[in-house]
Length: 350
Ligand code: NAD
Ligand code: WQD
Image (cartoon, rainbow, N blue to C red; front, side, top):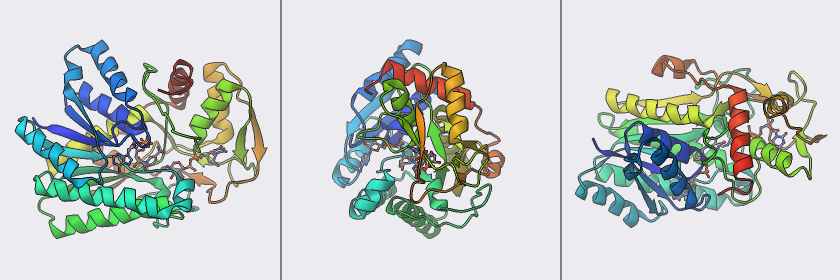
């Protein structure tokens, strides 16, 4: 059958996707430098697999490796062939993702994000593995004022993290154009993934101080010491607070498998695909649903707008629907329930 390589598979979205892949019967190889994740996540994925089926945990291999070390990457591909299970497809999550850090250190972001992707594609090509699903981001659309963002919306990233993602998209387009008979590529533009696996054993584990709303909301609610700062209540939105398209990380995991299967079966694809629910939720609405679902109080205060923010970022997901005949299913209540379950079981992460 062959195996699937998941770069960055120890991270937030990667770990949930690996679990879903294994549960579907895939053999999974995780390659991760652990720069933004912990080794413990591997044990947790195995633990969840074991609880469901003793045999499944065998289907996971882990290599601590930085994609910039091309020799090590080659070794992983050749060992898979020698073991009789060549890598048939790659889901490429590995990369750095902090907007603020990217503004302070653009060289690091271009180095890690772009060089890693070039190395990976070079090695894939050498080993005749040409199916790749790449983690892009809705951040590419910058501060567009459109109500719903579709894949044709102007690309206008406003920070080095976003430009590095766009650079990788363009690189993959060039690779596809030069050899369109053999590569199958999907570039997934995620909106705002939150939540966790329902076991509470894996979840988002930011190294350092988080910037995103959901891990901050969990932390402030758990510790009850400081308020969550809401960045502005004067945006042109339903209640003045920022509107985003939150998607459950398990839906996102499922989307990856469906897309990988789609591009592997249909071949000769080069897709740009938004992955979102198509439904916008304001910060105040998110807090209200979180409080009601979990019967807790979220301490918050309104502060100034954050530079670089947009009023509303919501996906037009019609292309996702027509391509896969699938849309995300899990509700905001489920995102809030599962995220809180993860937090109270792992208040300090892994
Ligand atoms: P994450 O930081 O939890 O996971 C990324 C993983 O990649 C980490 O485990 C990290 O250790 C690893 N990594 C980083 N550089 C590496 C390298 N050079 N070689 C090997 N491993 C390396 O992030 P995430 O939230 O799971 O995001 C996964 C991907 O999705 C990222 O590419 C991110 O840019 C993209 N994305 C995330 C979001 C989001 O809100 N979480 C939204 C849009 C896009
Ligand atoms: C969501 C909403 C904030 C924090 C970022 C990246 C983007 C992508 C997803 C990777 C906004 C508000 C936030 C806080 C707040 N990541 N907020 N107080 O800005 O949509 O996108 O993550 O690709 O690249 O830029 O997500 O979670 O930071 O913000 O009020 O402490 O919450 O203003 O309206 P964002 P976010």
